[in-house]
Image (tube, rainbow, N blue to C red; front, side, top):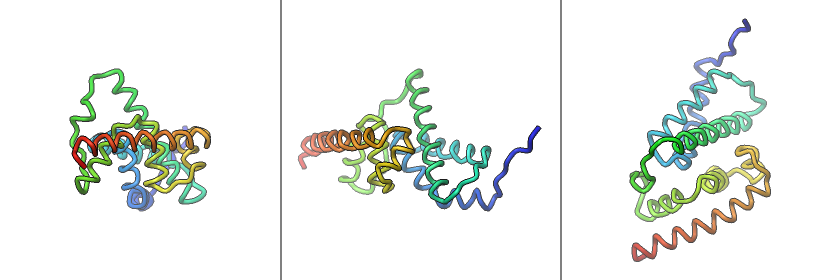
Length: 166
């Protein structure tokens, strides 16, 4: 039996400090629930500790963690499809102000495949090619999802703003 790879407690703490907020934001947008996002981040970090992968660069580590988190969120969606779930509209997600809340609501109303690319590209600052690697799609597919996601977000945000009298 081969010895299990391990990561030092200091390295694990450094990964949490460096990437914890980023992972949480991604999982929150993909799952729509603070509790589910916290669980997904915890599962991602657990896989990080169990696998103890060797990374070439800090960017490689960040991309690996984001990919694992996105895959875990996808698995959660598959489980939700087989089991009863709470509608997204009933969730009370935190937002800094009313306008931010409306934008977050519009973003959360989009299908997961558009939310993921929008968050990774615009919030996390990844280039199209990097987003493609993280989600396992081609750069042209990411560009199309960004384009359609922006259009859907504008439509959704405009609809909510009109309903609220803005």
